[in-house]
Image (cartoon, rainbow, N blue to C red):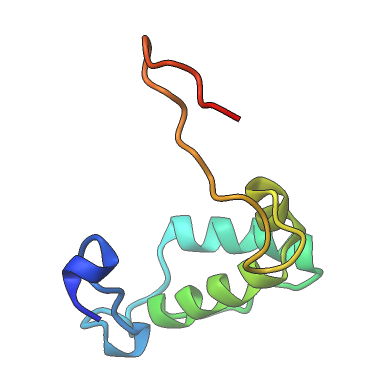
Length: 94
């Protein structure tokens, strides 16, 4: 997929990250703790950045928090999200 087709740089597989084998970051671990509570899982110790990223993707798919935030009941379901209008922008029709 080209950069123009994705609206920016194409997502790179975590297995291909130059720093993927480094320890997971604080924000990754914090987010995993939140998602873990939602899906009834415990964050494994010693995660790498790449492993944490994959686990985040998996747990986001399983989390009701993610679906509630997007209005989805199943993956791929629900209305597209809309960024809040700028001040002075007319309200959306509908």
